[in-house]
Length: 305
Picture 1 (cartoon, helix red, strand yellow):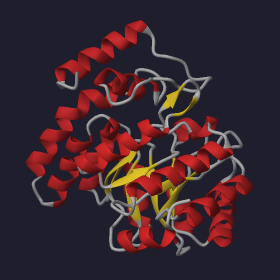
Picture 2 (picture 1 turned 60 degrees about the horizontal axis):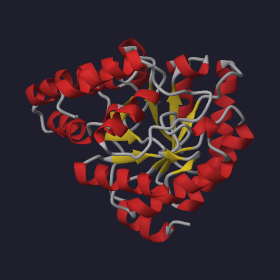
Picture 3 (picture 1 turned 120 degrees about the horizontal axis):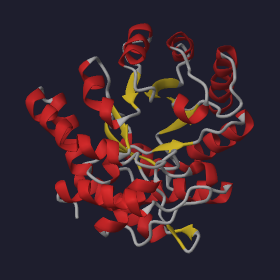
């Protein structure tokens, strides 16, 4: 178990924002590759990544056992050791399971939880509100909502987000609709201190321009230094540099979705020598040869391989 006191002491003054990696969970022979995960974390911190999210969608949370999920969160907190904030993915399609995983993240010493809207169930807007109210009431822990209709089948509307934001434990949202209109409405309706994070790499730069605070990123798995540099440049007022980095990485943003995330990301990391295996959990499957060729071309253009 991570040392809660030391981690909290070190990260207390660190803000959540900037380039936040939704880190992959490396597997080897069907099991979590703990050394591989630790190596990735060290690389991210060295590269300037601002925060780390274990057990998000990109971390294949849906196919981790509860024991694996808890271990990945604990190992991430232990390895980070207070150097950057850790936002643990704890969401589920079950409110009870979400509460259980969020409580664990709190006890393990995470800085916040990333909580996805319940998937498949397709709850109403009132159901979504009641779900997050229940998690907040039971856990009393900083929570970032996660809205990704393309994965869950339900869109959490800005008015519902604003209702949730009235709860002091709901501190922000990862908005992955890809809609700048919806992002603008969330920012407009929510308190000024509410943290709006882009949930898509291709909207990271424009989201910052309309008041966002960062991105929870897939591309940061491959280009952590550049994504952090883009966020830093924007915050420093160097929009030209930030824009150039946006367009430099733009081909990668699309390439990482040639197939279901995180299949392309893991394939690319294996090509780059950053992980030993590109294994994914079924029902995900290895990348097709045709798409590997397309992905390789993008990686070569970016001098990643």
